[in-house]
Length: 44
Image (tube, rainbow, N blue to C red; front, side, top):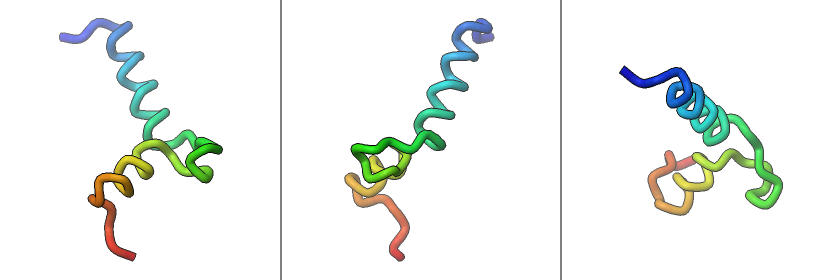
């Protein structure tokens, strides 16, 4: 069972990776940039 501290860190990481918009990534979340770089994003 994860401790409360570990759970809080995991929740923060998920929030950061999927919702925070990073200016240097053209206002995209890190998860989207990672998908684009790895070529795993959905074709538009």
